[in-house]
Image (tube, rainbow, N blue to C red; front, side, top):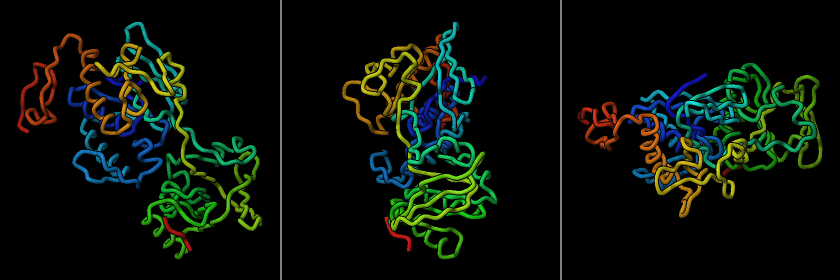
Length: 351
Protein backbone atom coordinates (compact mmCIF):
# COMPACT_ATOMS: atom_id res chain seq x y z
CA UNK A 1 0.00 0.00 0.00
CA UNK A 2 1.42 3.34 -1.08
CA UNK A 3 0.31 6.16 1.23
CA UNK A 4 0.51 9.87 0.49
CA UNK A 5 -1.26 13.16 1.26
CA UNK A 6 -2.64 13.80 -2.23
CA UNK A 7 -3.09 11.10 -4.84
CA UNK A 8 -3.09 12.65 -8.30
CA UNK A 9 -4.54 10.66 -11.18
CA UNK A 10 -2.86 11.99 -14.29
CA UNK A 11 0.76 13.08 -14.69
CA UNK A 12 0.20 15.71 -17.36
CA UNK A 13 1.13 19.40 -16.99
CA UNK A 14 -1.72 20.23 -14.60
CA UNK A 15 -1.02 17.21 -12.40
CA UNK A 16 2.67 18.08 -12.26
CA UNK A 17 1.99 21.70 -11.35
CA UNK A 18 -0.37 20.51 -8.60
CA UNK A 19 2.64 18.70 -7.09
CA UNK A 20 4.50 22.02 -6.85
CA UNK A 21 1.57 23.89 -5.32
CA UNK A 22 0.96 21.06 -2.84
CA UNK A 23 4.66 20.98 -2.01
CA UNK A 24 4.60 24.64 -1.02
CA UNK A 25 2.06 23.62 1.62
CA UNK A 26 4.20 20.67 2.78
CA UNK A 27 1.82 18.10 1.29
CA UNK A 28 3.29 15.00 -0.39
CA UNK A 29 1.94 13.80 -3.73
CA UNK A 30 1.93 10.54 -5.65
CA UNK A 31 0.85 10.41 -9.30
CA UNK A 32 -0.72 7.58 -11.31
CA UNK A 33 -0.70 7.59 -15.10
CA UNK A 34 -1.51 4.93 -17.67
CA UNK A 35 1.19 6.33 -19.93
CA UNK A 36 4.79 5.16 -19.46
CA UNK A 37 6.20 8.61 -18.68
CA UNK A 38 5.01 11.93 -17.22
CA UNK A 39 3.67 14.68 -19.46
CA UNK A 40 0.32 13.31 -20.62
CA UNK A 41 -0.60 14.10 -24.19
CA UNK A 42 2.09 16.81 -24.28
CA UNK A 43 4.77 14.12 -24.14
CA UNK A 44 2.96 11.24 -25.81
CA UNK A 45 0.98 12.82 -28.64
CA UNK A 46 2.72 16.05 -29.64
CA UNK A 47 6.06 16.48 -27.83
CA UNK A 48 7.42 18.81 -30.53
CA UNK A 49 4.29 20.95 -30.79
CA UNK A 50 4.83 24.60 -29.80
CA UNK A 51 2.57 26.06 -27.09
CA UNK A 52 2.06 29.82 -27.02
CA UNK A 53 -0.14 30.56 -23.99
CA UNK A 54 2.17 29.64 -21.10
CA UNK A 55 3.02 32.81 -19.10
CA UNK A 56 6.62 34.03 -19.57
CA UNK A 57 7.14 31.69 -22.55
CA UNK A 58 6.36 33.31 -25.93
CA UNK A 59 6.75 29.76 -27.28
CA UNK A 60 7.67 26.45 -25.66
CA UNK A 61 7.60 22.90 -27.04
CA UNK A 62 5.16 20.59 -25.28
CA UNK A 63 7.88 18.17 -24.19
CA UNK A 64 10.04 21.03 -22.92
CA UNK A 65 7.12 22.26 -20.82
CA UNK A 66 6.93 18.81 -19.22
CA UNK A 67 10.66 18.89 -18.47
CA UNK A 68 10.37 22.32 -16.85
CA UNK A 69 7.43 21.22 -14.71
CA UNK A 70 9.29 18.08 -13.62
CA UNK A 71 12.28 20.25 -12.72
CA UNK A 72 10.04 22.60 -10.76
CA UNK A 73 8.35 19.88 -8.67
CA UNK A 74 11.40 17.60 -8.25
CA UNK A 75 12.33 19.31 -4.96
CA UNK A 76 9.13 17.98 -3.39
CA UNK A 77 10.00 14.37 -4.30
CA UNK A 78 6.69 13.16 -5.77
CA UNK A 79 6.10 9.44 -6.25
CA UNK A 80 5.08 7.98 -9.60
CA UNK A 81 3.16 4.87 -10.63
CA UNK A 82 3.45 4.90 -14.43
CA UNK A 83 2.14 2.51 -17.05
CA UNK A 84 -0.82 1.66 -14.81
CA UNK A 85 -4.43 2.81 -15.00
CA UNK A 86 -6.51 3.75 -11.95
CA UNK A 87 -9.37 1.22 -11.90
CA UNK A 88 -11.33 1.52 -8.65
CA UNK A 89 -11.93 4.12 -5.94
CA UNK A 90 -13.09 3.13 -2.45
CA UNK A 91 -13.85 5.52 0.41
CA UNK A 92 -12.71 4.09 3.73
CA UNK A 93 -14.20 4.45 7.22
CA UNK A 94 -11.53 7.03 8.12
CA UNK A 95 -12.67 9.18 5.15
CA UNK A 96 -9.49 8.38 3.19
CA UNK A 97 -9.56 6.81 -0.27
CA UNK A 98 -7.96 3.67 -1.65
CA UNK A 99 -7.32 3.47 -5.38
CA UNK A 100 -6.43 0.19 -7.11
CA UNK A 101 -4.72 0.11 -10.51
CA UNK A 102 -5.15 -2.41 -13.30
CA UNK A 103 -1.86 -3.96 -12.16
CA UNK A 104 -3.12 -4.43 -8.61
CA UNK A 105 -1.16 -1.57 -7.03
CA UNK A 106 -2.96 -0.10 -4.00
CA UNK A 107 -2.64 3.58 -3.08
CA UNK A 108 -4.18 5.45 -0.15
CA UNK A 109 -4.69 9.17 0.51
CA UNK A 110 -7.14 11.52 2.24
CA UNK A 111 -7.41 13.56 -0.96
CA UNK A 112 -7.72 12.35 -4.55
CA UNK A 113 -7.23 14.74 -7.45
CA UNK A 114 -8.27 13.70 -10.95
CA UNK A 115 -6.06 15.56 -13.42
CA UNK A 116 -6.45 13.13 -16.29
CA UNK A 117 -6.60 15.65 -19.12
CA UNK A 118 -9.05 14.25 -21.64
CA UNK A 119 -9.20 10.98 -19.71
CA UNK A 120 -7.28 7.74 -19.87
CA UNK A 121 -5.57 6.97 -23.15
CA UNK A 122 -6.32 3.75 -25.02
CA UNK A 123 -3.88 2.91 -27.81
CA UNK A 124 -5.02 3.07 -31.42
CA UNK A 125 -4.58 -0.52 -32.49
CA UNK A 126 -3.65 -1.67 -35.99
CA UNK A 127 -6.47 -3.15 -38.03
CA UNK A 128 -5.12 -6.69 -37.88
CA UNK A 129 -7.23 -9.77 -37.18
CA UNK A 130 -6.21 -11.40 -33.90
CA UNK A 131 -3.89 -8.56 -32.87
CA UNK A 132 -4.85 -8.98 -29.20
CA UNK A 133 -3.33 -12.48 -29.15
CA UNK A 134 0.17 -10.99 -29.43
CA UNK A 135 -0.21 -8.20 -26.86
CA UNK A 136 2.55 -8.69 -24.30
CA UNK A 137 4.11 -11.35 -26.53
CA UNK A 138 6.24 -9.05 -28.63
CA UNK A 139 3.49 -6.55 -29.46
CA UNK A 140 3.71 -3.30 -27.49
CA UNK A 141 1.76 -0.05 -27.85
CA UNK A 142 4.20 1.99 -25.79
CA UNK A 143 7.80 1.71 -24.62
CA UNK A 144 8.29 1.60 -20.86
CA UNK A 145 11.72 -0.04 -20.57
CA UNK A 146 13.88 0.42 -23.69
CA UNK A 147 16.34 -2.17 -22.43
CA UNK A 148 13.76 -4.86 -23.23
CA UNK A 149 14.67 -4.35 -26.90
CA UNK A 150 18.44 -4.58 -26.46
CA UNK A 151 19.93 -6.78 -29.17
CA UNK A 152 16.50 -7.51 -30.66
CA UNK A 153 14.92 -7.00 -34.07
CA UNK A 154 12.32 -4.27 -33.72
CA UNK A 155 9.71 -2.97 -36.17
CA UNK A 156 7.99 0.34 -35.43
CA UNK A 157 4.89 1.46 -37.33
CA UNK A 158 3.82 5.10 -37.43
CA UNK A 159 4.70 8.47 -38.90
CA UNK A 160 4.52 10.93 -36.01
CA UNK A 161 6.95 12.24 -33.43
CA UNK A 162 6.65 9.22 -31.17
CA UNK A 163 7.49 6.73 -33.94
CA UNK A 164 10.40 8.83 -35.19
CA UNK A 165 11.82 9.54 -31.74
CA UNK A 166 11.72 5.91 -30.64
CA UNK A 167 13.19 4.69 -33.93
CA UNK A 168 16.11 7.07 -33.36
CA UNK A 169 16.53 6.03 -29.74
CA UNK A 170 16.32 2.29 -30.34
CA UNK A 171 18.85 2.48 -33.16
CA UNK A 172 21.45 2.47 -30.36
CA UNK A 173 19.75 -0.33 -28.43
CA UNK A 174 18.22 -2.88 -30.80
CA UNK A 175 20.19 -5.02 -33.22
CA UNK A 176 17.87 -3.97 -36.04
CA UNK A 177 15.22 -1.22 -36.30
CA UNK A 178 12.70 -0.98 -39.12
CA UNK A 179 10.37 2.02 -39.38
CA UNK A 180 7.19 1.40 -41.39
CA UNK A 181 4.80 4.16 -42.46
CA UNK A 182 1.79 3.98 -44.75
CA UNK A 183 2.64 7.34 -46.34
CA UNK A 184 5.88 8.55 -47.90
CA UNK A 185 5.83 11.69 -45.75
CA UNK A 186 6.23 11.92 -41.98
CA UNK A 187 4.25 14.18 -39.62
CA UNK A 188 6.99 14.58 -37.02
CA UNK A 189 9.41 17.40 -36.35
CA UNK A 190 11.73 18.21 -39.24
CA UNK A 191 14.79 17.63 -37.06
CA UNK A 192 13.59 14.10 -36.26
CA UNK A 193 12.85 13.34 -39.92
CA UNK A 194 16.33 14.51 -40.88
CA UNK A 195 17.89 12.40 -38.11
CA UNK A 196 16.06 9.28 -39.31
CA UNK A 197 17.17 10.06 -42.87
CA UNK A 198 20.77 10.29 -41.66
CA UNK A 199 20.52 6.98 -39.76
CA UNK A 200 18.93 5.36 -42.80
CA UNK A 201 21.77 6.57 -45.02
CA UNK A 202 24.26 5.07 -42.56
CA UNK A 203 22.43 1.75 -42.54
CA UNK A 204 21.44 2.07 -38.88
CA UNK A 205 17.68 2.16 -39.55
CA UNK A 206 15.57 0.56 -42.27
CA UNK A 207 12.71 2.73 -43.49
CA UNK A 208 9.74 1.32 -45.42
CA UNK A 209 7.20 3.88 -46.65
CA UNK A 210 3.91 3.62 -48.55
CA UNK A 211 3.33 0.33 -46.77
CA UNK A 212 1.54 -1.09 -43.75
CA UNK A 213 1.60 -4.15 -41.55
CA UNK A 214 -1.37 -6.39 -42.35
CA UNK A 215 -0.58 -9.54 -40.37
CA UNK A 216 1.38 -10.83 -37.39
CA UNK A 217 2.87 -14.31 -37.53
CA UNK A 218 3.91 -16.65 -34.73
CA UNK A 219 2.56 -19.04 -32.14
CA UNK A 220 3.36 -18.07 -28.55
CA UNK A 221 5.30 -14.98 -29.62
CA UNK A 222 5.76 -12.77 -32.65
CA UNK A 223 8.09 -14.32 -35.19
CA UNK A 224 7.44 -12.06 -38.17
CA UNK A 225 5.10 -9.46 -39.61
CA UNK A 226 3.58 -9.28 -43.07
CA UNK A 227 3.97 -5.96 -44.88
CA UNK A 228 1.79 -4.90 -47.81
CA UNK A 229 3.22 -2.25 -50.13
CA UNK A 230 1.44 0.34 -52.26
CA UNK A 231 1.67 -1.91 -55.32
CA UNK A 232 -0.08 -4.68 -53.33
CA UNK A 233 3.08 -6.78 -53.13
CA UNK A 234 3.76 -8.44 -49.79
CA UNK A 235 6.74 -9.65 -47.83
CA UNK A 236 7.43 -11.05 -44.37
CA UNK A 237 9.90 -9.38 -42.01
CA UNK A 238 11.43 -11.34 -39.14
CA UNK A 239 11.05 -9.40 -35.89
CA UNK A 240 11.22 -9.97 -32.14
CA UNK A 241 9.05 -6.95 -31.34
CA UNK A 242 6.39 -5.00 -33.23
CA UNK A 243 5.52 -1.54 -31.85
CA UNK A 244 2.62 0.28 -33.58
CA UNK A 245 2.70 3.91 -32.46
CA UNK A 246 -0.52 5.35 -33.85
CA UNK A 247 -1.33 7.56 -30.89
CA UNK A 248 -3.95 7.16 -28.19
CA UNK A 249 -7.71 7.57 -27.94
CA UNK A 250 -8.83 9.62 -24.92
CA UNK A 251 -11.55 7.98 -22.83
CA UNK A 252 -12.94 8.66 -19.37
CA UNK A 253 -12.37 4.97 -18.68
CA UNK A 254 -13.00 3.38 -15.26
CA UNK A 255 -13.24 6.83 -13.64
CA UNK A 256 -16.69 7.06 -15.20
CA UNK A 257 -17.85 4.29 -12.84
CA UNK A 258 -16.78 5.97 -9.59
CA UNK A 259 -20.10 7.67 -8.85
CA UNK A 260 -18.92 11.07 -10.03
CA UNK A 261 -21.33 13.51 -11.64
CA UNK A 262 -20.55 13.39 -15.37
CA UNK A 263 -21.58 15.81 -18.09
CA UNK A 264 -20.57 15.27 -21.72
CA UNK A 265 -17.70 12.94 -20.81
CA UNK A 266 -16.30 15.42 -18.26
CA UNK A 267 -16.49 15.59 -14.45
CA UNK A 268 -18.65 18.34 -12.96
CA UNK A 269 -16.96 20.38 -10.22
CA UNK A 270 -17.75 23.31 -7.94
CA UNK A 271 -15.74 26.06 -9.61
CA UNK A 272 -17.22 28.72 -7.33
CA UNK A 273 -15.20 27.32 -4.43
CA UNK A 274 -12.62 24.56 -4.72
CA UNK A 275 -13.02 22.38 -7.87
CA UNK A 276 -14.31 19.55 -5.72
CA UNK A 277 -16.57 16.91 -7.26
CA UNK A 278 -19.81 15.59 -5.78
CA UNK A 279 -17.66 13.24 -3.67
CA UNK A 280 -16.10 15.08 -0.74
CA UNK A 281 -12.32 14.80 -0.87
CA UNK A 282 -12.21 14.10 -4.60
CA UNK A 283 -11.24 17.03 -6.83
CA UNK A 284 -10.94 17.34 -10.61
CA UNK A 285 -8.71 19.88 -12.36
CA UNK A 286 -7.68 20.53 -15.94
CA UNK A 287 -9.38 19.41 -19.13
CA UNK A 288 -11.17 16.50 -17.44
CA UNK A 289 -13.51 18.78 -15.47
CA UNK A 290 -16.41 20.95 -16.54
CA UNK A 291 -18.30 23.94 -15.14
CA UNK A 292 -20.02 27.04 -16.56
CA UNK A 293 -17.51 29.08 -18.56
CA UNK A 294 -14.89 26.30 -18.62
CA UNK A 295 -11.89 26.96 -20.86
CA UNK A 296 -9.76 23.95 -21.82
CA UNK A 297 -6.39 25.66 -21.52
CA UNK A 298 -3.31 24.48 -19.64
CA UNK A 299 -2.96 27.83 -17.86
CA UNK A 300 -6.57 27.53 -16.61
CA UNK A 301 -5.71 24.09 -15.27
CA UNK A 302 -2.75 25.62 -13.40
CA UNK A 303 -5.14 28.06 -11.71
CA UNK A 304 -7.57 25.28 -10.79
CA UNK A 305 -4.73 23.19 -9.31
CA UNK A 306 -3.57 26.16 -7.20
CA UNK A 307 -7.03 26.80 -5.75
CA UNK A 308 -7.62 23.08 -5.22
CA UNK A 309 -4.48 22.76 -3.08
CA UNK A 310 -5.68 25.45 -0.67
CA UNK A 311 -8.80 23.41 0.09
CA UNK A 312 -6.98 20.07 0.09
CA UNK A 313 -4.79 21.55 2.81
CA UNK A 314 -7.86 22.13 4.97
CA UNK A 315 -8.95 18.50 4.57
CA UNK A 316 -5.51 17.15 5.41
CA UNK A 317 -4.83 19.66 8.22
CA UNK A 318 -8.25 20.45 9.75
CA UNK A 319 -6.66 21.69 12.98
CA UNK A 320 -4.51 24.31 11.28
CA UNK A 321 -5.55 27.73 10.10
CA UNK A 322 -4.42 28.56 6.61
CA UNK A 323 -2.85 31.91 5.79
CA UNK A 324 -1.88 32.62 2.20
CA UNK A 325 1.72 33.80 1.84
CA UNK A 326 3.66 34.64 -1.28
CA UNK A 327 6.75 32.77 -2.44
CA UNK A 328 8.37 36.16 -3.08
CA UNK A 329 8.30 36.62 0.70
CA UNK A 330 8.81 33.07 1.97
CA UNK A 331 10.85 31.50 -0.80
CA UNK A 332 10.01 27.92 -1.74
CA UNK A 333 11.76 25.76 0.84
CA UNK A 334 10.50 27.92 3.70
CA UNK A 335 6.89 28.14 2.55
CA UNK A 336 4.44 26.46 4.90
CA UNK A 337 1.12 28.11 4.27
CA UNK A 338 0.08 28.04 7.93
CA UNK A 339 0.31 30.74 10.59
CA UNK A 340 3.42 29.03 11.98
CA UNK A 341 5.58 29.42 8.87
CA UNK A 342 8.71 31.51 9.30
CA UNK A 343 9.56 33.82 6.38
CA UNK A 344 12.82 33.31 4.54
CA UNK A 345 14.49 35.35 1.83
CA UNK A 346 13.73 34.70 -1.34
CA UNK A 347 7.03 17.52 -42.27
CA UNK A 348 9.46 16.05 -44.92
CA UNK A 349 9.99 12.86 -47.08
CA UNK A 350 12.72 10.31 -46.33
CA UNK A 351 14.31 9.29 -49.60
